[in-house]
Length: 264
Image 1 (spheres, helix red, strand yellow):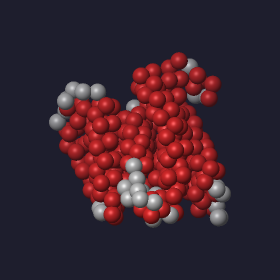
Image 2 (cartoon, rainbow, N blue to C red):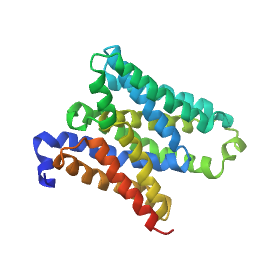
Image 3 (cartoon, rainbow, N blue to C red):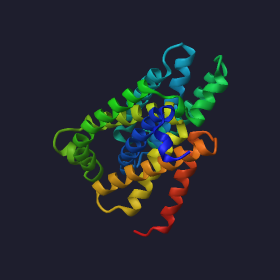
Image 4 (cartoon, one colour):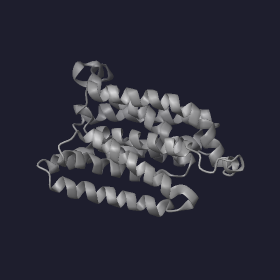
């Protein structure tokens, strides 16, 4: 397979679906890393996976149930985060709860084996126009919200007493971002798999924080590295006849190794 073959009708829609996610997830991940909440991102992805399984059990569209589960998890996360309650302990519980619920639920469904494989390996090649519309809508919402969230998230990170001093003890922007991150991870988990979605949130910003100077450049580097890894993984997975999710994670891990050779 070559990059020219990507524009074949068979591959074009899956390619576009993954491409938008590969740009969006690292940008959201940059904010997650800034807030030092990468463990929460994995927890949200695991809860989303449990939502997919629940959707299969109750014969509802899995993606919608995953979105609802992720939104509820984001609300719980925001509640536990107030006043420093829960912290990483709560996020670890989210990971374990989502993992166990997904696997136990998959074991009692008619197609549990296929479902569990889809959550691990991703099902990008089976996505189509309906998923593309949802992903593009999410990207549009993120493009509208992130400029509004940007200044508030930066203030909350570097001047944590700013809002309290100005009479806003519980600013709503934290919850808005948590829900945005949760929905993004939920859609990504149903398309590229749980760990691939988490890897896109975690690794490109991890490298970008090392090489970029300034916040805007960090966002650009994060998106660019995510897209680069995605392009390599998409072609390699098809040429080698391997599942897409694990190949993407492997490519991102190679990218992560390059971080060790970069000095600040």
